[in-house]
Amino acid sequence: MPEPQQAGPVSGIRTVAAVGTGVIGAGWVAYFLSRGLRVRAWDPAPDAADTLRRIVDAAWPALTELGLAEGADPHAVELFPTVAEAVAGAGFVQESAPEDLALKRSLLAELAAATGPDVVVASSTSGFPMTDMAQEIDDAAGAARLVVGHPFNPPYLIPLVEVVGGERTAAWVVSRAAEFYRHIGKSVIEMDRELPGFIANRLQEAIWREALHMVAEGEATPEEIDRSITDGPGLRWPVHGPCLTFHLAGGEGGMAHMLDHFGPSLKAPWTRLDAPELTTALRDDMVAGAEVSAGGRPMAELVAERDRAVIAVRRAVEAARAAGRS
Image 1 (cartoon, rainbow, N blue to C red):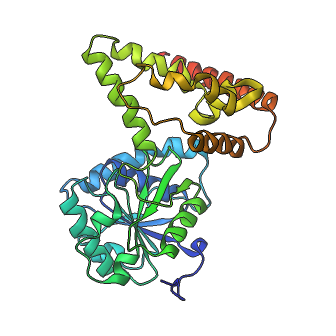
Image 2 (image 1 turned 90 degrees about the vertical axis):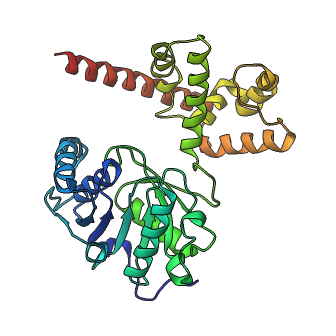
C-alpha cells in the first residue's frame, strides 16, 4: 500500500494522542512532552487525571537532566472524555491499554476508525503480535495503519522501542513509526517479522525463568542472582550487548574463536533452556553479525571502549547509591 500523499515529514507532527495513561502510557506522555510535543490523552479510569499528573511530575526532573527540547511543557497535556476526541488533530497515536487481547482488539478497531488515512496508530503491547490484535478490523486501510511500538519501562527514561507490523500493516507505516520515534530521540529496532514477545522481552524472560528455576531449586537466592548481573555481565551490556561481549571473549580470533572453543558448552547443563544446534550456518551468521557490530574497529579499540564504559558505569552507580544513602 503506498504512503498517503497527505502525510508530511514526521518533524511536522506537533500533537500526539496517548490512549491509555497508566504507568506506560503516562511515561510516554512525559516523554512526548519533554520533546516539545502537545499531548491529547484518554483513559477511562476515574483517577486518570491524578495518576497522569503524578507520573509526569515524577518523571520531569529526570527528563530535565537528560535535556528538554525547545518548548517542552509538562502541562501541555489534556485529557478528553472519549477516544475520538483525544485523537482528533493528532499526527501520531500511541495506544497503551492493559495487556488484554480482547480489549486491545476493540480499542485498536475504534482507533483505526477514528483516525485519518495518514495517522499511524502504534501499540505499546509487550507481547501481542499486531496480526492478532487487528482481527476485528475489516477495513484494510485501517488495519494497514496499525503497528507495534513496544517501549520499555519507564518509557521516558529507557530509549529502546521495538517496531514491527502485522500481516496487514503497510510498509510505509512501519517506516514512518520508526522515523517518528528516531526523530524524538528513541533508539529503534525495526523488526522485519513478528515474534511473540519481540526481541528484548524474550531475552529478559530467558534470564527471569532461569532465575526462578534457581530459586525454586535452592541453587541461588534472589540477592545473589541480582548481584550476579549488576556486578557481573550487566556492567558490560550498556556498551556491548551479549553478542559483542562474546566477540571480545574470543580475543583476537573474535566470535569465530569463541564459538569454536566454547561451542561444546552449549550442550552443558548450564541452563534449563534447550540450546540450538551450532550449525555451520548459525556459526557463520554469528561471526558476520559480530563483525557488523564491531564496525571494523580492531579488538584493542573495542576492549578499551568496554573498559572505559565499565569504569564509568561502576562510578555512576556507586555515586547514585551514595547519594541515596546521604
